[in-house]
Length: 118
Image (tube, rainbow, N blue to C red; front, top):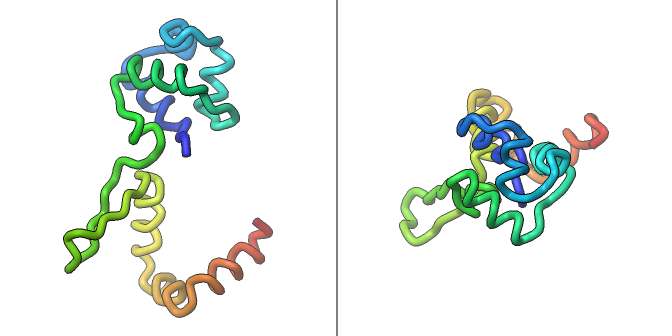
């Protein structure tokens, strides 16, 4: 999944405006804005241009940059986006919520989705 917020983060870190980046990758400023908002996904050629212009990796722009290794199983790896790890860390700050979710994860998530109407 293409993570537009990472394009914005990297662009700003390099001190580029949306127009600067657009000029570097041969698209419009509107396209860059849409990539950052997540309302448009770049085609493969533009994606490669983004990687080069922002000095990053495909894995980072796709949200696959954090490898989590299970405790006792060195061969088992899961790749999680930074944003997912932040969600997990926030949930862990509330032990009662963690316990509630562990009791029946699927049912608990369905319940939360229902009450939030999402």
